[in-house]
Image (tube, rainbow, N blue to C red; front, side, top):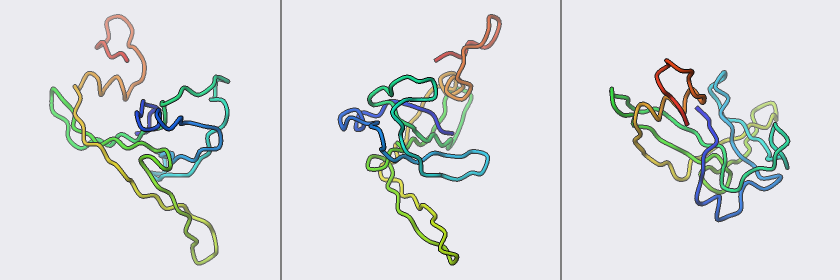
Length: 128
């Protein structure tokens, strides 16, 4: 799944900047696509320095914790992108992950990341 998260390397590099390239995971097709950062987000707000798209890949889950891999999706930080052309001369981006982080978090925190909202009173208490 793809979520926005803090990246210390991007923070120190001043990312995201307008026109920076990043990979975006299209869950419906199970593929990465190349996108550009625009000056403002969907809500018209300026982007916050260091908060960039991240790919979270579930590796193993237990009743108490989740083991996952996390990749920064900013080109030049956690992913490099190149363009290849198929037999019909159609461009197709190819991605290489540079620095995959293996991490662990509690199942409660993972559920909060997946569901992205605070459940109403009487729910299971997921919150970010």
